[in-house]
Image 1 (cartoon, rainbow, N blue to C red):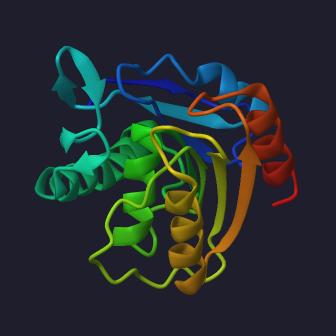
Image 2: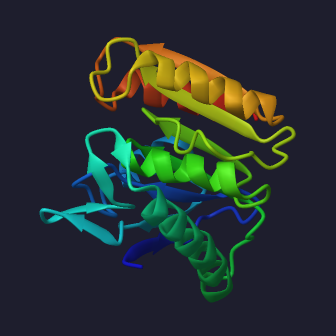
Length: 200
């Protein structure tokens, strides 16, 4: 997968897996990674799917309607890639925190929905429920931060509250943070995510 890798200055800190939104790329979220923890290692990945020239992490049938077969395939692909990258770049595979926005947050959420040990934690900006027809693995004490918009036209509020409940029911420790800026990724929610991260 096309990616950027930045070795952190503190080997005890996690590796941030950065996952962009539709039409973004592997440079989009680097400033957010360095803001949340400038000492962390960063693996920023570009989605392998192209929708009218816009990179994405999995196909969709229409706005908000996922291609579930492709989502499953791409989630497995990303999960395997993290393992390969950990060997190649010599970072701790068990200390990976995903930071995703929109489409990137959706595939990060699906990593949680699919594997009990894929991520040590996750910061999900404007995610949807990736799959309502699956049994979640044991996510006991996995910390998850969800940033949502009360007036998000792409991701209705119910998606955020449903996702919070599904993850909580699987044992995850979820914090749901609300803003009023639609589907935008804003500094106030990044600041809230940093505060959450600093208290882990």
